[in-house]
Each structure stands twice: as structure tokens, then as C-alpha cells.
Image (tube, rainbow, N blue to C red):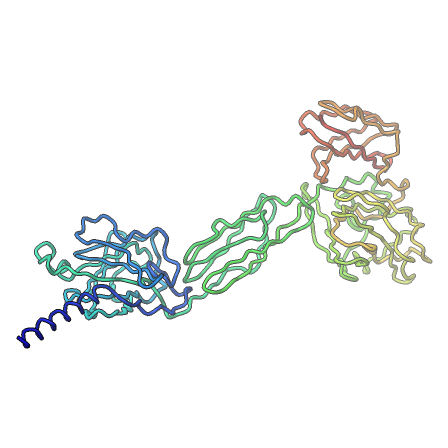
Length: 525
């Protein structure tokens, strides 16, 4: 009786032991591979591929349960396993990965050999792995090279089977179908992925060429963000190599602007500085001074009297070329602090302007600024101080004639430079039509000259112009200086059709044959 009792106790203890190991009591080892080196399908340690179905309806006899070990560790349980699939939430490019990791727990001897399948584009590759069946976790790190012929750029599914089903299918014994617990299903690499972008700086123009592209190269997921709403990327997130298109809205200002595009991936952030060119002004008014009375330094209208060899930066004034809508050329000048200055230089062909009476220039400031001029000679020094062009209207052309008597110096027979300065201000301005001439007095913005009239001031279709002197042409522009309409007059009066204009406020620059320029405003109803 004692022996029998001892045997019965032993059997009972054995049964209790088997029952105690019916499912894992502890979690698998927590993964330590960096998230930037992982594409995870199921793991508490990583962000998993969204939308994955761990029990799609493939007609399997398998049952599925999600269990929790401890307070938070989620584990997959497949019981009565003949076969089962994992349908990824999206196709995964794992070609940059080197291994497939799976943690397996079982106390079923029939699960000692576990077939594991990768599926892509309707094709699949199965390998078998040995796992412990004594109720302990087996950590498998399977080189992806073992899945011979697999298209790793388009992986969409896993399949797990019992060895009985994999070997014999329906001809096998269902009694040998197994129970397994799975955790930490992920692809990984021991090579830290790098992030590169094809450009560090980009320039976008106005709408005619308002897109730019750059390439992302990475072995992991990435995000793209612009810090300016006028510049938008074609994609804000993804995985693997990609080409991103940046689309820019039109720049409504006469100043260039920048945006920072940040690309984050593989544990690294790259910044691309994107500059959008400024809106280019409409052409300056065509000069009306007779060519015989002009000595030109810079203008498309006249034959130059000198050869400009350089636009010199005297002190933090940067010069650039500008091409206006009509195709004629101008200069763009950019200063970054008050007092900055520079000059066109023609020292090889000195200019005698002693017979001239005025210096003409057209300037288009993009902000409120005070622009000054001075003359520099080869043997008689430079004019005293800077001669201000006076109050200038921002974002439109200002045509200015400065009497040469304003430039105080001993002689003006050997001028080699005309200097520009921004007095106590800074910013950007455009310049055109710089020349000496013998003509009338200053022509800048003669609003008070009532001998030139336009009426009515608020108009629907027809605007009338009357002048005491002959008018060469009128130029209609919007409030940001864009030329909307240009009309030749060559008379003292003109009827102008404005029916095609949109409702709003407009400027009209009236260029007179006597060299004056008059500005008027009107409202289109």
C-alpha cells in the first residue's frame, strides 16, 4: 500500500507540474536592439506595423488567444495548431534587415520542430527550426539568407504550422497538432542604418518652377516636416528610400524667403534649407530723355557712355542681376545694416559730366528705406556726404532726378564711380536707368501737379486722362508694383479701357514727354 500510495502521489505531482507549465509564467527576454534597426510585427518593445491580423480566416483548425503575462506583456497563443497566418497591415520592405527574431514557448513535444514561412507577392519560403519543449522560451534569430529566393522588399505575411501538417497535410494525425506561444516577432539588423539626403540646400522660384525634389536614403522609417506653410512635402512619413517633392506657393513679396525642411530617420535628423526667390518687379518706366542729352551708365534704353567693369561692394552691399518680366535687365542690391554702400565702377573710361545738369536713377525699394548717392572722381575726390533720394514709396518704382549741383566737389570732369548707400536703413532694392542728362528738374512722384488729371477716380469701364503737356505713355500697376497694363498716348488726352481689371485700388504712372513722371491713384469698381 505504501508503494502504491507513493506512486499515486508521484503521478499527482507530475500532473500538477504539467498543469503549472500550461502557459508561460515569465516573459521572454526583453529585446535590446535599437528601434531604428527593427521592423516589428508583434512586440511590446517596439512600435508594430499597424493593422496586422494575427488570425486571418484561412480555414485553419488552429485557435487563437491573446494572453498577458504579468501586468503588460502581450503574447500570442496558437492551440491545436495545424497552420495559421499573420497578415501584415501593409507590405514591408525588409531588404535592409539581416535577421528574423521570434521567441517561442511550448511544452508540447510535437512542437520540437517548428516550420516558419515568409510570404511575398503570392510566393513563399518555409524553413524549420528546433525549439525547446520543456516549457522555456527559445529565442530564434534566423538569418534572412535562409529564406532562399524570398523577395524581401515585398513581405506581406508569416505562416506558422505544426511539423505534422507541414510534412503530411491532411494525411497526418491531428493528434500531433501543437500548442505554441509566440512573442517578439520582428525583423532586425546589427548594422545601424544611416540617413542621407541628396541636398542640404535647395532654391525654388516663382510658380513657373515651383517644385524641387530630394532623395531620402535610409534603412528605416522616416518623417519629413516643413516649418513654413508655403512649402509642403509630398510625403510626411514612410520607410526606406524615397524621393520627396517640395511644392512652394507663389512668393507674394519682393524679398526672398526661407524654410527649413527636417528629415528624421535612423536616429538622425537632417535639415534642408530651402530658399524661394523674391517676386521680381515689373520693368522700370521707360526713360523719355533724348539720347543726345544723355550720358548713360546703366540702362537698356541708351547706348552706354562708359564700360562698367564691376559693381563693387564697398561695405556689405551685395549686388545681383535681375531680369524683369519684359526681359530687360536691372540690378538688385541687398544690404544688411544701416550705412552699407557700393558702386558701379567704370574707372577705365572716366566720365566728364560737367555739361550735364542731373543724375537720373530708378529705384524700387522693397521696404521703407533712405537711399543716398555720391560721385567719386579719379583726381578730384568724392562729393561731400551722401545725397538722399528723399522719401521713397516701397514696392513700386521711384523715378528720381538729382540736380548735379547737389554733389559738392571741385570738379566733375573725371567721374569713375556712382556710389549707393542705405542711410540708417537696410533691406533690398532694385535699380535701373542710371544716367546723367541735361533735362528738366526732379521728376519724382509729382502728385500735387494738377495739370495732369484722371477721372473719374472710381471707374467701372472707361478712365479719362487729360494733361496740359504731351503724355508719352501710362503704366497701370497694382498695390504691390506689378504692371497690369501699359498704354501709349503721345497726346494730351486719352480714353483708357479698364473694364478688364479686377475690382480694387491701382496706381497709374503717367510719363510726360517733358521728362516728368506723375503718379495717380484710382479705384476699379
